[in-house]
Amino acid sequence: MTTSRYRESALAAMRRRTLLKYSVAAIVAAGWAGGFTSAMAQSVDLSKWSPEYIRSIAGTETFDTAGTCGKVVPNDYAGKVSYWYTGPFEADPVIAHEQDAAFWEAFKKTYPNIETDVQSITYNELLDKFRTSLLGNAAPMVIRLQILGGVEFAAKGYLEPLKPEDVGYTTADFWPGALKSVTWDGVGYGIPTNNETMGFIWNAKIFADAGLDPEKPPATWDDVVAYSKQIHDKLGISGYGLVAKQNAGNTPFRFMPTIWAYGGGALDEASENPTYEKAQLNSEGTKAALQAIYDMYVRDGSVPTSALTNTQAENQAPFIGGQLAMMIAHPAEYARMLDLASKATGADKEVADAVVENMRYGLIPEGPARRAVVFGGSNIHVVKAEYVEGGVVDEQAVKALICMWTSPEWSTKLAWVGSNPGNLGGFKTEWMKERLDTIKFLDVTTSMLPSGIPFPVLPYAPEIMNIIVPDMMQNVLTGTMTVDEAAEDAAAKVDALSSGGI
Image 1: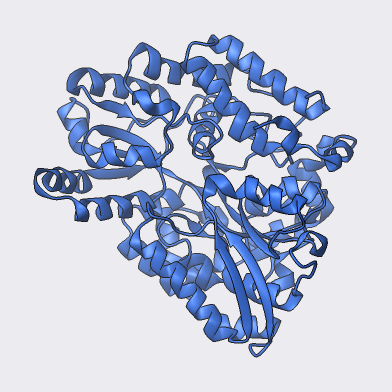
Image 2 (image 1 turned 180 degrees about the vertical axis):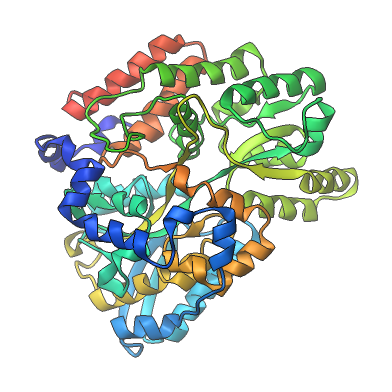
């Protein structure tokens, strides 16, 4: 993949702007201030966020999705909408497939006269396929993109302005950090559908067998390195499920929290008021994070040798087989392990059942600077008509789909095992209460939300996160470069992107 794919004419215009406008302060001044204030003042009190508070508000309010959306777009409206998103695939739990099917059944019932043309595209293919479709004026009317992707397309002029108020909700119904991820040049170009934060998972039996406290996860990233070595030395299995595949979103989602914890960053996205002016991949914090994975992969051999090509999916088999002790993942991982255990037979079944019984979730370890997790998820966007197949966007059909998808009900149901509802009202629904009662460890990962850090709100953020950061890791892990060389090389590439030098 070449860097030119990420930069077209609009990026030249973007570089003429002052990057300070992307700071939180500037975004507030540009028009989000009311949303930030009201979000903190509404009945979902973000200042009290904790597992206990989340449970206390779940099931306290009911919502009429069909009625709410019917006020935005009449339920008898006749039209057509095309939609691309990453739906459930084979590795996802059964319930994810069931909820996806239930949404489309509910949409058809609510809007029987709206025809839908829907494509589910894999996570790693969606961005490239969308880029290609835009160049050929063959894009869908609506697309749901991972949080990393939207600003690129807004900056290039492909997306229509879109805010919660356009589909019957308010800015106060969504996390401020999530809204920042869909803001470009002071304008909103999307609505959050779900907000992802992950947790730290470990196998308590492996911990005990290796001489570690089975109910106590590593508190710091230095502990992760030490625990991984101890587990490998004593048991001969992998301690930590390192993910380092190039051009795969799983990689930055699992490595950036380590970088931030040690005090580094891609730019200054971890600061309270980021300016995105200068790369920090050559900072001491980033180098410390690189040294940690070097120590595990090269010095200790305590992580899978296949880490260079692994995504999180490749960690699942060794974990359920009792051959991997620790990893970062969503609450959906527990449901996935239940599915895998249900399909195992014989001796494998006994091992798998024991893994499920000993599976534990905790907060992601902290570092000298902070505890951090990627504030991830997805956002829904509307494509400008001139780039859509047929050259027409059915505005009413589009609003109907987005209203339902971002409702408290469906932003909760569609995030059932793997995420959190984008609409804060979802935390008050009966479905959130059901999730908390039936999905083990959900409250742990949800409690990581205040530690969430969004990726840099820049059009070329996908290139930084999916290419430059994984390449930096690979350079260290393969011995192509030293830690210092890899960090300096990556920082130079980021700075060159910022200045238009690549």
